[in-house]
Amino acid sequence: MAEKIVKVGLVGFGTVGSGVAKLILEDGARIAAKTGIRLQLACVVDVDTQTQRSVNLPDGLLTDDLNRLLGDETIEIGVETIGGTDIAKEVQLALLDAGKDVVTANKALLAEHGIELYRAARKNGRCIAFEASCAGGIPIVSAIRSGLTANKIAGMYGIVNGTCNYILSNMAAKGEDFAVALAAAQEKGYAEADPALDIGGGDSAHKLAILASIALGYEITLDDIFVEGIESISSDDIRYGGEMGYCLKLLAIGQMDEQNRISLRVHPSFIAKNSALARVGGPFNAVSMFGSAVGQVMFYGRGAGMMPTASAIVADIIDVAMGNSRTTFRQLCLKPRTEIEPLIKRIDEIESRFYIRIMAKDQPGVVANYGKILGDHQISISGALQHEGRGPDNTVPVVITTHITQQRNMTAALNDLAEEDVFSGKPVCIRIVDIPEDKD
Image (tube, rainbow, N blue to C red; front, side):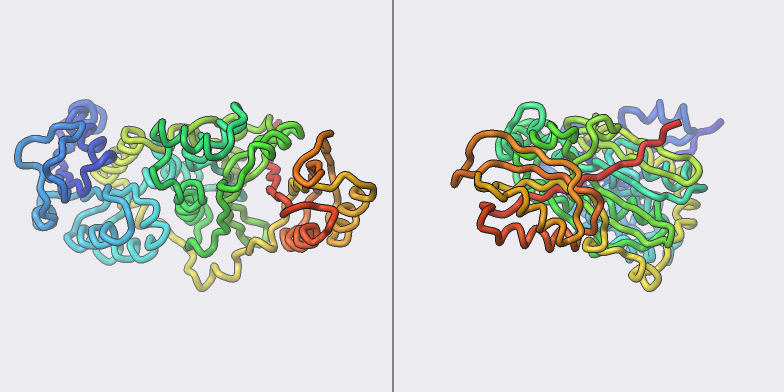
């Protein structure tokens, strides 16, 4: 069978872009042998044409002129790896207008402007492929869009940020404070110099917006997602939670109830130590999904890094070249915002169990005091833990877990607890997420 030559243009020659170029240039023969598609890197565009990269390009391939790529009608696929949302958006729109299909790993751009970009692609008869945008080398987008199409997805629970997972894993295993674990993540290259997007939960929210939209079939925006990061997590709470049988993870959660209402949130979550996601350590990612027919499925692997992300991008390039992506993109049907907004559950409506830590003064009546406050807000206590010893202001830590209650009840109770003289400081509250396990 004769090979089909497909020319590719790359915009962005940084870490990920270099990985993409490396795979196309070095593994082209193997890819062609498996697929019948010979990928040809025809143009690489970057503002920096001088810095040495980890891959050597053939002479004349690297340019700082985007128009050279846009004006080459023989280039069928444009790959955007520059990141960000402003220039990247302009680049993708220009590629689509020039009649080129687009491959991207840009989760922030798709989460914030995906609806506009998808419409531009359809207007131009092109497609956008974005497997690498959500979990690096894990092929979860294609799994949702193809393998799980027959299912109604009732729930998805994801560890989708390797930086946060590495930090929380170190805090649990080594008893490190947050600042120490963050510094270690930065030293290892798992965290950026400015880690705000990761530790604040924004990166996870971007990925959840993309995954939830295709899994649930809704036009999702970032405003639909409640976001809480891990910056205030204490090693003490990880330890106390561990004593009560829990492991702490930053989870991206999407749930659909029987009335098709959905809840979308990113926040620190205590999960059972024996659950599958609890065993996902270090910088790894994992997503557990529950389908109406298939039951529970779980995807696990490296969620970031040059080569895992490049692997997913090149897989998308091949899928576009074979004609598959255009078909799946054309059939990506999302319910419009006008139908979606009434179906979004806000965080106050969410029901959950909770972990609470209060610093209580060592005096009679404390137990009755917090028991009454919680009871007044229809919150039932499921367990409690108190260690001997003294903390600041002659206080002792009291850890409480609750049965399921609405977030609005817990918010009101926390405000009342903070105002009581027998408690010092602001109570700590972390949600407990009971992930259903698919068992025989």
